[in-house]
Length: 110
Length: 117
Image (tube, rainbow over all chains, first blue to last red; front, side, top):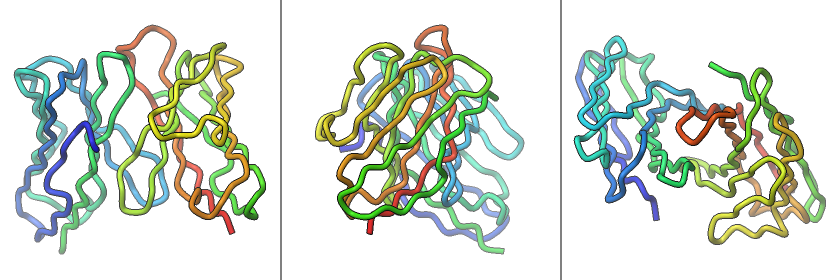
């Protein structure tokens, strides 16, 4: 079973639409990371959130860490075909290791 | 960010043989390295945590005698898949955490695709 529940698992939208991906857990994390992974490659770090309630923006991507540090969301505004990929959330446990969500496979159609 | 290099990027081996995968931190020292396995269309599953100079900690369900991990230096960890079988075919990814404590970031290698025939 996944420590982190990510939803939705699959998302197919048209270019220009907005979307939100959720990452939820019953556990508290010292930090949470969002990654994007291309086929056949390792995950590439997008952002790390550490403080409960923290909001970080990266161009059209907005990341939020829940107040209790158990959940996070990724919001993409005006999605583009280049945003297509597998988005993974990962939480750093109190023991120091990282656990991944199941991933959200995003397809943005032109 | 820091660079983690995995070698080889892909390998094909015969059933019953052993395969060694290397994970190197190129520009930093890593006290801890993590080994993950990723099956097609699935997420990364942690296999084991490797600490320099000590025995690796394996996740439940991961056979330590089958997946041998050695972390002999602060820049190199190796994963050896022994007596590989077709069901071991997967994408193996390592990550390395820089010396300095549990809150430092971990960086990922590019992965190794293992195919056992």
